[in-house]
Length: 182
Image (tube, rainbow, N blue to C red; front, side, top):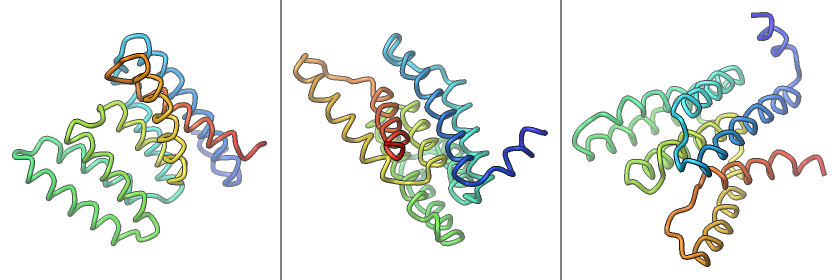
């Protein structure tokens, strides 16, 4: 409890730095698992998502957190059209109730749709949502995409069909967090 009180009295920049370091540590461990086993343990990704959600609630981003929780429940609906309709409706309501977070809500919905169609894996989506909730800046996704593109080119030169995308998430987030200090 005293840790939360201490965390509360730090300024926004200091809180973001501490949360970013914790996020990068999580992504580094997930990258090691993804490179070694091609699978990331669920407790790591779910724990990271919960931690990111708590941090986002602490910083006032309640609508994206509620959208993330709702989308995890909608994922069990059948058929797919019903899931997509509910997901889109939930994202619209989230954006309406907290307009400042509309872009973050749209990104979370986009990640969920990519998972729904099998383009991204579950661990990738949870880590991307965690990065979006903690950092709150969509520019990090550009760096993640560039890292993924470079990784994809290298994989295609090696004749590989799949890449461990968690490594790209880690590298892009690392570049985003470290860049302002240089």
